[in-house]
Length: 356
Image (cartoon, rainbow, N blue to C red; front, side, top):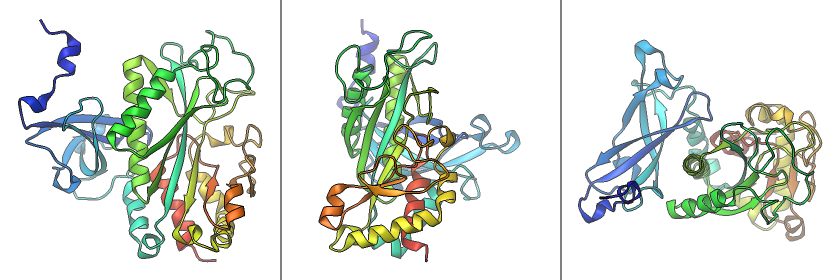
């Protein structure tokens, strides 16, 4: 008699050419990921060869009940670390039956920015530092924290080890390996300042792929946490008081910034970001005002400042970039619940397309 685990781990490729494709999309809140699976006749590696699909948008807050059909357009393919074999994860964006992007489809506009010839020739690179908090499922309190109480103050938890400092490492390491298996360019992980909070980094990724990879990395994390019976929170300030919030610091460079003399291009780009500070803040995640207070390694939400090696700045430039005269900078303002399509394309639009 087969066990459930035996059936879950069946290798389909031994018996059929058919594969399972898990179509992933973003729901009506802009942060809730949804997915459903379909059978395909054989392996597929090009998203343009995948069929479009539909779903009930009235059940995701994206369409009225009397006209509920929303169409999924496959955009990026990743290996499926859960089913393995030739099975795939498919990142999609969503459209009306008439072919218009629905309001929550932020990828469509981002793709327009990244396909602009001026942007494309600059080959924008991104590295996104995604912070998140693991919560106990039944009480929605950080993993490892005493029920209804608090652990010792911050200090020993950042990159810490030990059963009294690191909570949820099995989830974190499983996620790390699953992302590598999937083909996501995940570049590292670490424990964060607040206990129960972790970070993973995606990148360097070019243009629209940064958003695709971060969304699928989030999807994989949520699926692993589901198996573990733990909740993932992307709230930018999950615990009030003297505890660090959660951000999605976005590292960025263009070809001009990476070449000799790039530091001057970086400084001009930062000046452009300062001019559009309010517009960026408005698009950088909900609840960010609870995080950007001027404390806990943040700049005040109403103030723009930049500096070299300054983690209390809106934008930080690394010492190596200053020394080498070229490189990248880090926009520290995005919240952990930001939409990477919006943030990455907005940075490119402001720094490359926006004229002084």
